[in-house]
Image (cartoon, rainbow, N blue to C red):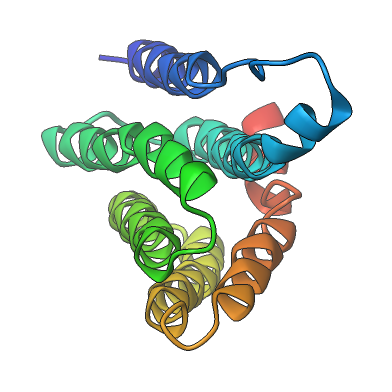
Length: 192
């Protein structure tokens, strides 16, 4: 099997994830600025999660284009990532509705940490596939450090939410900014 089916399936699941997130948005009961302001936490949690999912999609796209061959290990690693991503709409809605409560803020960080772990597992399979290419192995290993650090920071933010939800929110905003641009080397490889 080529990477086309893998990418198409992943794109479909990610599109469904984004669709579910947007369908969870409801319009305010009244057409007033005050009612819209009351819905701001839900809209902001949606915007943050949309950005996170978009960044995951872009980086997943570049990652899949670096795949040499589709193996069972790669397929299951990808399914694992998609499973954890599929829970993002739930934690997004939960966070938006209970944005001042520690547990929903912590759960959001835990969920994104689990997505990070799944991305790390997927990249580990790519490291195996590029074992014969020292340059790509070194590159994947370097980015893997970034993935592991981001995962650890997300999981730390889940714990920090019990100290300060604002610290946790700052982390939830900072990490996507670190991943905003796709991985340059993979972007170059996918164009060749």
